[in-house]
Length: 173
Image 1 (cartoon, rainbow, N blue to C red):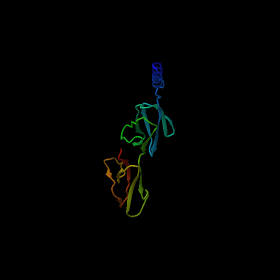
Image 2 (tube, one colour; image 1 turned 60 degrees about the vertical axis):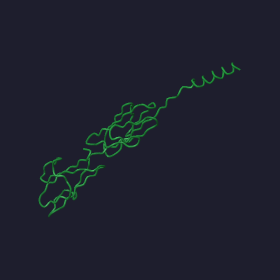
Image 3 (cartoon, helix red, strand yellow; image 1 turned 180 degrees about the vertical axis):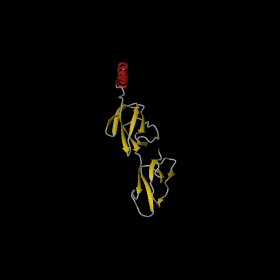
Image 4 (cartoon, rainbow, N blue to C red; image 1 turned 90 degrees about the vertical axis):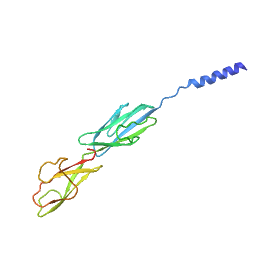
């Protein structure tokens, strides 16, 4: 009977130690979206890009840090999906993860009515098309506007020859 118990005990020990735990690999997918352009840099994995989607495969619990950087007048506006941090995205790699990096392009500013020669007084409205709110600055003397120029808040009345110049800046910069 002792010999049987010894064999049974040996068998149980062998079963407990014979099968090593398998390390799981997970995929991180990053997609760039929005009206702007930008780059995404990752530490802890080498993203392989096809178009606006990049991915890498990492072992479970690998520390990953992802940063979005706007280029060419574009602003990185934030993360969605597996990240919601305002700055660096640090997804916990305990499963496959999808992250979206959003970029906002430079605002497009338009005047209505469009530039031309008109008789009489005209109200000119300026508008900005952007994901985030814009600040519009203008001059009416033909000089180049800056952030120190008059901020737009209501239609501009043009009673005489006026050379209106304007630009917009989204609130991210």
